[in-house]
Image (tube, rainbow, N blue to C red; front, side, top):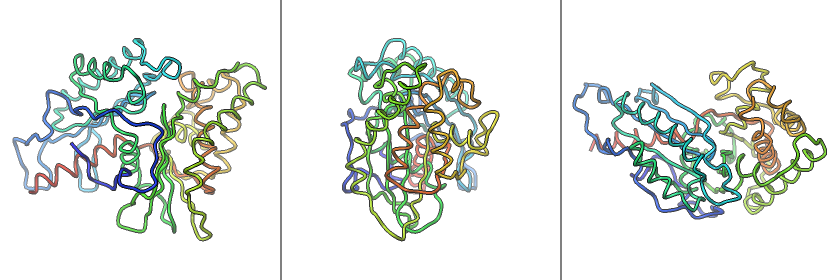
Amino acid sequence: MADQASPSPQNATGGTSARKARPNHAAIQNHQSRTATPNHRQNGRWPRLRSYAAIDLGTNNCRLLVAKPSSDGFIVTDAFSRVVRLGEGLVETGRISNRAMDRAVAALSICSEKLRRRNVTLARSVATEACRRASNGDKFIERVRRETGIALDIITAEEEARLAVLGCQILLEPGEGPALIFDIGGGSTELVLVDTSGAAPAIIDWLSAPWGVVSLTESEKFNGDDPEEREQAFESMRARVAESFSAFANRLPHLENCDFRLLGTSGTVTTLASLHLKLPHYDRKVIDGLIVPTESMREISTMLAYASPDERAAIPCIGKERADLVVGGCAILESILDIWPATRVGVADRGIREGILRSLMSSNERSTNL
């Protein structure tokens, strides 16, 4: 089902991607129907008991949202998130390992059960960079379908960028001139330049760079206990990312009367925002929509880059699970700040899943009203 709820970067001029994606697969559970018709209707705008779901299987995380439409968007009725590290070892082998597959299938099995329990009538399940890049990505997709009933759609980098923008654009600050939205993933980073002068943000230009927190970390081997090696590795990471951003950076407008608005959606920016607020534990309610001074983001990024693995693991909101990956995320974030001189960074704890839900609801509403 083609999503058409917002402008697609596939139609934007100047957009570039480092890779071509595999052809799309079916993207809905085999026990459900994309065009399912509700058995009951209310007099209101939305059919009774209709639930929508979005699954985002990334290079590092597996995430699910189940929601019902509301007058001002949607209400989340269930959610799930688990670190699966699907892309672990992918940089070296070009394949998804059996252990990574096992972790992902276990997480997706939980998602499948939630879909059944919540009586989801319309869903979309997508896979991103790890499955685009892996030589055995199709084999993994078939195993997921066979064992969980979930049919993953390996989306293009263009579609990934579009969905991320659709999911978080509401948090963009008002201002003059174009804005930059970014999504630091596990295997890639999407940068999207948008024009906000119309009713909805329109994509001007975009880039999908082949560096995410997992791929960048695995490409830069170093002794984390050696302070000098940590510093050298961080600078090397930044150089890799800067090179991948260079063509896009040269196309960015250099305007005198531009507000240089910047909005990020990723574990990296939400983690650094938590440290900015000195939270004892992560709290989405205070992070989603937060605006953080760029100077603070850079200071926290530098601190994390030069800290030892044990020091990072001991910091609230990071822990052992994120301690090794957050440095790569910091390198990517600082490279973004280098090319887009914003004084503030908007933080979004929303993205692809929310974009999928909005697109599904919008498309189904149009078809229902025909």
